[in-house]
Length: 291
Image (cartoon, rainbow, N blue to C red; front, side, top):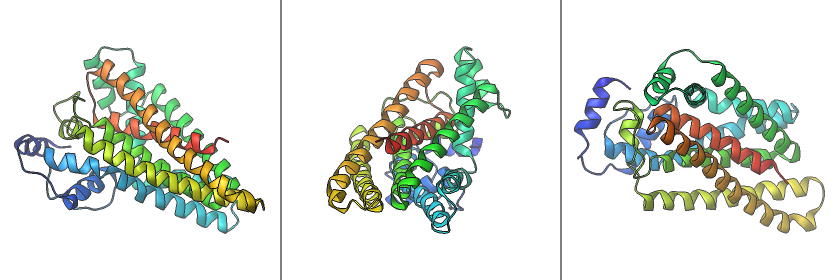
């Protein structure tokens, strides 16, 4: 984010509440490569935008599921469908969150004081910690999705949507009141500490309901695919529970990383948000693939 944007953010600290439309534009404009005209760049817009972040995750997850499902229907096999599904979020974010994951891994892995770690994270190159972390995370995501697509089209597609929503929800919670920014500029300075706990809890409940519905659909499809129709209802109930557990695992993984970053860096940055997103998405997919 440029200095002009930071100045506008500071100037807008006391601005009025942003509308849902402004929040959506902020969320899609900052968290995807979609050409969205930002009408506001201040704390109020950042608060509304991060509350809308799970909606971005649903859209990205749906696009991921669509491509993976299309390839599966064309006979590609589960592995290629999984690779395609994993590539879509990276393409729609121009690798923004993966870059944040790599930078955060380099910063935390350096064992340097906070100021030096933040300088490492801001550098344009990627070190060995970052490369290794990104490779392992992508392998875990592909492996989980391949297993899910192997159970059925809806099993993989629903997990992709749940992971997209849960990972962005983890970003919403990472912006809750009391979480400070590590720098005075950038996305972290605009959104850190801006989301009220009550509003974040309401969004989390909505995502949990979505995950339960998606998990039920995916599990019913997987059970039906093997011809066990009498087991569709119990399977759907189990899938609903697994969907909620996937969200819980995503939030737990994101929270653990957030706490580590706060302890080491003194707060959050845009890179930390990206790392939280990818970590949470991976946790959600792994839990969805279990059982």
